[in-house]
Every structure is written in structure tokens, then in C-alpha cells.
Image: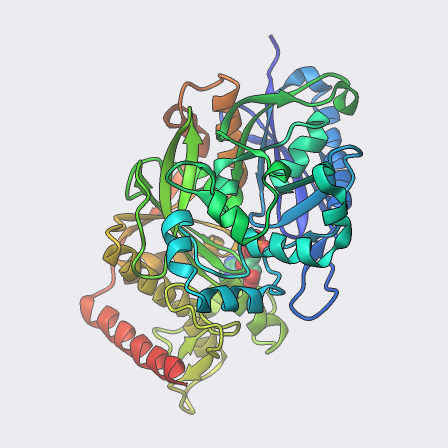
Length: 490
Ligand code: ADP
């Protein structure tokens, strides 16, 4: 039989992609289309679910045509921006309102009010999350109270995250969500893997509107025959950060991946039991297979690559992001300059949305290279604070597997190894989110017996070993702590 491929649908925040993977992990094609960001008011971010579906279908069809038709596709895997929530009609399959995106802050007051009433501790215990507009629950509460057509729809209303919406459209009416996406709604009991009646009530979510929670791999259903000319099974699903973690083969407790893109997202596998955080990290589902869940702790840093972008676009210190590496290498140190990149506040483990950034330790010897180097150094400093929080929660890092746009920077990869004193690993193919979705789809369609077997898809990795002397390392950390203290004191 001729070669068959796994088709991955990677639904990001700004673009939709379809990618073709051979079973050995080689990527044989990518089709990408950017979709529209709607900002109806300050702090509001919406997507048009119809546009997302249209572009997804276009990208997927182009990939299917590339390999000669649906017979060459063994199965489909889906990975997606998490927390974004879609409202549609079960009868027509059309959206009934805009999709509210994870970045949307419209429910800040609602969440603050609930926090004041003491709902955060039980929410954290039950769902692993915090009371923040980031998660879907408060977005649904707001929509049900503000968009009358949703209430009027009654039993016709379907609600779901992006992968749930896409599966509905692909299959013509299957209403499911995978456990990793469900874990980000603030509506799922993470111990039981079921919707929590108490939080559905609190966020005013009618239970009949929600999808069934399913595994991350399995034969959920097949695409409607008219979409690609023949049905194709859908056999894998996971939220983007969980998919990246799987794509990095973080399959055993302690395995950790860090994605350095616009922001940085770090997940550590904590095994078969959810580990509560006492240091403001999130407890989340890493995957669910055959009904059994694996868990992770998650920490997010708001500013990572966006700091380099800011140096390039707003300050004009760089022509390209990649140039930061050459500048950092051109000097032995930052000459005492320290950047605390709180340009949109500080995320985990500080959670200080009001904090503002600083550049300190300047002298007349400070030039462009020193500022750029200080910006790159800030990545290891922020990661170090997270590593401390993870360790305090009982999740020690022994190795860090990196990916994301910034991970292409060799100087940064070495600095992470030096400052965190762990081996840093970078796969040759850094699209780990898509690899993770392909691994799940491969397990779901029987191509692989387990995720461990599928992990061969990750391919070659490059290693960076710690090499910095202890005096230099502790001097850097001392300077960082002082600068951070000043920022947090303001
Ligand atoms: P996202 O998926 O969040 O959109 P990417 O993973 O594509 O982001 O990473 C893009 C970010 O990485 C940009 O903010 C850019 O400034 C930064 N970046 C890209 N290449 C480099 C590099 N070689 N060195 C440092 N930063 C980089």
C-alpha cells in the first residue's frame, strides 16, 4: 500500500494551518492562512468562528489534494488555541455570536467580584485554575447575560472551545471536547474529568449546551464524505500547550517543556494525580487516554519574544529578531544592565498585572548590544523564577525541552542551560505542537500502540549543557532579584 499521512489541523490565535506528517515524523507540507482579529472595544478580542471554519476547510482541502486525495490520509489530529469559546446553533451549525478569545479581558470585573466572594479557593481546588478572565467559564457567563439570542436559542444552543467547533463542522454534528481543552474552561472537575455542576451553576452554563468530554486519542468520528470526497477519521485532539508537551515527549513525571514564542509557556508532567499548586501555578490535564488522565503544572510568562519584537519595532535597536544573537555574543556581559520585562504586567509566579517594566543598571558604557543582551538574559531570569516555583510545588526540572520562535537563538539556549543548570534540548523540527497532535492522531488510529512509541516522531535533538561558573551565575541572579524587587515594590 502506498504511503499514508496524518493531517494535522493547527488552529492558532492568529492563523489556521494544515500540515501533513509522514509516520516517521517528517513534515511533508504546510498550508497556512491568517484570520481576522476583531477588537470591538479596548480589552475585547473576538474571532469569527465561521471564518475559522472556512479557512480550516480550505487549508485541509489543499493538503488532501497535495497527496492525491482522501485515501492517502490515515487520520486527522487537531490542536488549538485554548480557552477561546464558540456559540453555535445545533440545528444550522452556524455561529450565533462572536467567539470570545482567550486574551479577552471583558470579564475582569466579574472575576474580581467572584474572587471577593471567596470563590477562588474552591475553583482552584476543583478545576486547578485561578479566577481570571483568561478561562472560558466567565466568558460564557458574560455572553449568556449579554447576548439575548443565546438565551432565546434554548436547547438549540451549542457551546464549545475551538476543537469542539471544528469537530462539529467536520463531522456534521458530533459534539465532543477533549479533556485538555475542557480543563481550561474552569467548568471541569479535574479529578473526575467531568463537568462540575457547581461551577456550571455559578457561571450560568446550561448543561445541555456543553460537549461530551472525551480522550485525546481515539476514533471519535469521521469527516462528512462531501468535505474531502470520502470520510477521514478524526483520531487525536489536544490544546496547543499540551500538544507541544506531548510533541516534546514529556511523557514521564518531571519531564518539562518550555515554549518561547510571544510569551513563554512551561509545563511539567506530574503523573497520574493532579498536583495542587501553592505557588500560583496552574494544575492542568496533560492528556487523557483510555479514560485515564495524566496531569501537568503550568506556568506562563507574558513577555518573551515580544520583548525582542519591541526592541526591534519600537526602539529600532534591531533589524531582525535573529540579530539579537550576534549582538549578545559581541560582548562578554551586559555591563550591569538588567531588564525586567513587565510590559504587560508579570504573569506566573508573581501575577501582578499592574507591574511595569524596568531597565536598570545603566552607565555611559551601556550601548545597544548591552540592552539587547539584557533582554535575552531576562528569559533565563524569568524561567529561573518559574523553576523555583515548580520546585517548591514538588516538580523539579532535570532537563528543559525548548521550542517556539525564540528557541532558534543558540545563545539563548546556552544561557538557559547555564542559568538553570540543566541540560537544554531543542528538537531539529520545532513545530512541536503539530507533532504532538500527529502523535495523538497516530495513537488514535492504531498506527502506534502508545505515546512512547509515537515519540519517535520527535526526531533529532540538539543539547546544550551548563558551562557557566558559579560566581557569574549567582551575580546575575542577585542583580535580577534586586531589579525585580524594585519593580514589585512600585
Ligand atoms: P507565536 O507562536 O507566539 O506567535 P513564535 O513561536 O513564532 O511566536 O515566536 C516569535 C517570537 O520569537 C517573536 O516575538 C520574535 O521576536 C521572537 N524571535 C524569533 N526569532 C528569534 C531569535 N532568533 N532570537 C530571539 N527572538 C526571536
